[in-house]
Image (cartoon, rainbow, N blue to C red; front, side, top):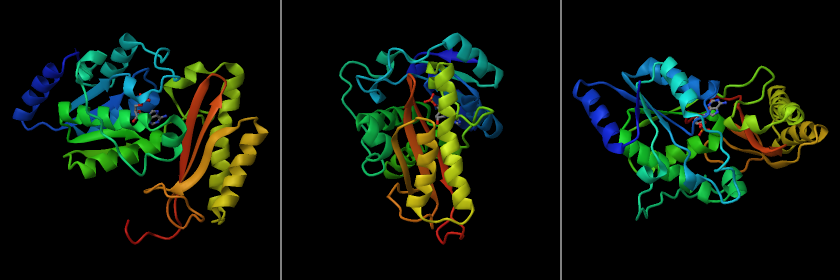
Length: 288
Ligand code: AMP
């Protein structure tokens, strides 16, 4: 595996692969790898000749009061893990390589960015995500890019950018990887002390309770939400948001007759955690 810092080196390596008609898969990450990241790398390895992983803690998607300076970083460990998954190129640029002096362009997506994490973290968050992902697509020009359903709203934002800007890349959303007790894996879980780590299991338990009610035939969004809210309350967790929304448009929903995302964000101890489940509609959808 090669570790590359410069955009020009990535372009050269990808161009060399392209001359022999190799397919290129990209996994964008901010590092501090766990099984969630590794699952995306494995998916990419299965279906592509050249696998590129980007490792870049993107400053533009953090607000001033967020954890940019303390975000866990361990490039040597990450490189060893990526290499063990058969990754070909690890692109780990310095911020100045991605945002040189004079950088002045932002990719702004309307609509799906305005709720959930967009409302909770501020609009800069998805502006930063959309801009850096668009740049990575321009640098690597992958055939396929792999994202985790853990960040369900991010997947929708990226799909919107790809459609709206006619980018020639296929987006693959991969399932959420969880700890044995159901906590969604996250680089931010290292912020949890023992007590908070226990409390953090309430997020997935709340989503499970909602999911069980839905599977038992309840279609009323307010009732499903209430079941999840009760689990959070019992665990002493007050969510930043706990919402049911259309899984494709993120429009608010009154029922779960279409595929519905139930998404939660909460501060637990020193970490801000997010999680979600998709409640599948019982009826096959006409447009599916
Ligand atoms: P991050 O490094 O947090 O920006 O994540 C990089 C990619 O890994 C994103 O597409 C995330 O959605 C994905 N990811 C993070 N955690 C998980 C998880 N627990 N399961 C699946 N994918 C994940």
